[in-house]
Image 1 (cartoon, rainbow, N blue to C red):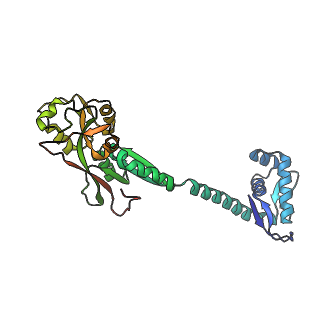
Image 2 (tube, one colour):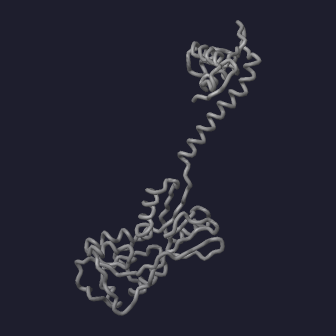
Image 3 (tube, rainbow, N blue to C red):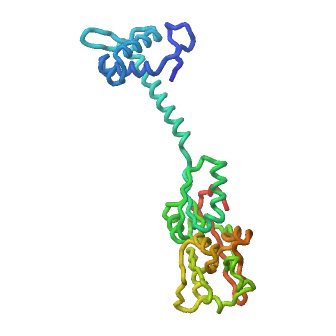
Length: 295
């Protein structure tokens, strides 16, 4: 790095002063030995001698009193020592600041259920990363209850859940309402015109709780007491591959299965004598901290 400095002995305005020479000067002023200075700087002793000579030429003054036994600073050397240290410190500070700005990003800790992530959050985060590199995103995928507890414990900045948070010090808004639909493969034609509640136990039902206690309870009550489902999982997105293979049916959020309904690989079984509940998605965050984005 070159620092421009004007000396009385140099008629040029702004003669360049190499901070490498200043560092060598400061080291020599400290240890008072050319050999030790060269060792500390990992250079040849002749390099140290040349740097000091170059610096003295730039300043126009002798900086060291040399004798056979020791080395000491001249009056001008003592004066330069303070300025040299400030120049070197300023260089180091500026480099740290520049690097800090280059790599520093605001941390955004997001908690979401898997279904809400796949349906709504992933596209938003993808676009956000393309347009805004100021954030370091950290995404936690878990169940609604766990995420809301993490938010209250200060471990998350923002959550997207199926459960609301009604507590002082936090904001909560509903951002989505989904229908719960009974879906199966297009290959199944038996119940294409609809199904009654009492017929459900005849199906190969793939059960997913997806952290919705009320919905899970609703589905369980559609079946006889102590009914054992042939397949259970806590991740709704993992069910779709089974359905596409023609295995069974399942209640899933309409937003999750919409792409498959549009391409007609899955179909909705109409409910003839009962209705499925709607599912609300909630965005929650601490009061006084405006979210980086809204869904």
